[in-house]
Structure formats: C-alpha cells, structure tokens
Image (spheres, rainbow, N blue to C red):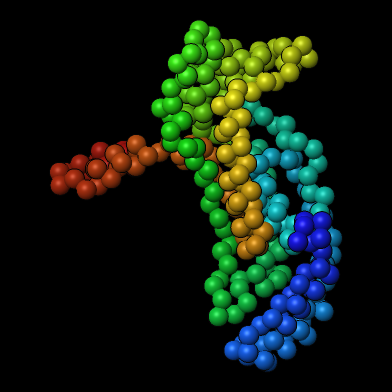
Length: 257
C-alpha cells in the first residue's frame, strides 16, 4: 500500500479482507465484533493548538502524537530563537507535552484492556552520537586549513551540550557554517555546513523519525533531552566508584553526585 493510498477507507477495506483470511482457530465472536466495529471508523475532528509552535526537531515526536489526536497546522515557521540557551526549546517541549497529556485524559490512551500492554505516557529521548566520531581521525590526504576545520567540527560535535551548536570563536563559526557569521548575516554568503555536521544531522533525523513513530503509535509524549546528558558517563563512573568504595568518602561522594 502506497502512502497516498493510506486513507481511512483503504484501511477499512484492508482490515475487512484480513478478517476474511483469519483461521478457524480465531473466536468467531471476535471476528464478528471486528466486522461490526470497522464501519464505524471516522477521522477525528481537526483541532488547533492555542499557542504557536516553531518548527524544530525537538518537538517533532510530540507533534506527531498530537496529529494522531487530530491536531493540524501546528507549526508557524521555523524555529528562530537561537542563541538563548535551551529554554526556548524546552518551553515548546513542555507545552506540547502538556497538550498530549490533556488529550490523553479525554480518551482511552492507556491500552485497550488487561490483555494488552499499557502504553507509556512519557518517553525520554537522548539521541547519542555514534561513539566512533569522538576519536575519528581526518583522512590522510587532508592537510592544512581543511584538516583543522575537520578537527574543529569534530570536537564541536563531541562537546555539544544543548540543542544546537555553539561557536565561541570566529574560527569555530566558520568551520561549522562554512562562512563567518558576519558574512552570513549580511547576505554575502550562505551557510555551508561541514560534511560531519551533515552526517550528524542525518543520524539525528533518523532517530527522531523513529521515536516520533513510537510517540504517534502510543499517543505518548516525548521529552528530547539536551546533548549534555550524553557527556555524563565520566561523572557517573566517578560517582559509582565513590559509592562502591569501602573507604569513608561520604563528602567526596556527595560532591561527585
């Protein structure tokens, strides 16, 4: 079935054909109940959010879940509140999460019966980067400024803590975006992200699409955690070492926590 054919009428017809092919071992009462319920399917009424959402990957899973509830036309332009930390991103995640919870309260989103698993209410999404990137060396034939740019972008990816890249120096900005911020803002140049950044973007897009499909399927909310959550392994190991130690290191353990 092509995506263009994925309509409610096509799904009804498909499910009815599936009922015809069910083995005799299936309870005929269940088959009859399914046949009677299928014609009653209808599209949910089109709903609108009472607030504005700017398009960004951090809210795609929640928007997919809201679309399953019947919300439409939720995005009003691209996200542009950049450079103000994680708070603008978090505000959108919290708003859409609350909207999902409100819709779940109005419907039976917790599972059909005791015979089925309960659907989760919340997913925590921490899209880690492929670990090989942290130690990946530039190609042997890459020298000079291009090699330096490769290393700068690689280190920026590894050290990313928020939802976007932060350039602390003009060199970092030019390495990440392919031109200086002044030239980009003045319209004299267009952003040209480094191939490493593009690979990370594709990796993140795939993970986001996967969790978005899960959220829409379960009618659950998703909180996209900032990238800093993926840089805590060293601190966690240190805390674990203090916790398991036989010595009297309660103060060190507290500081580590």
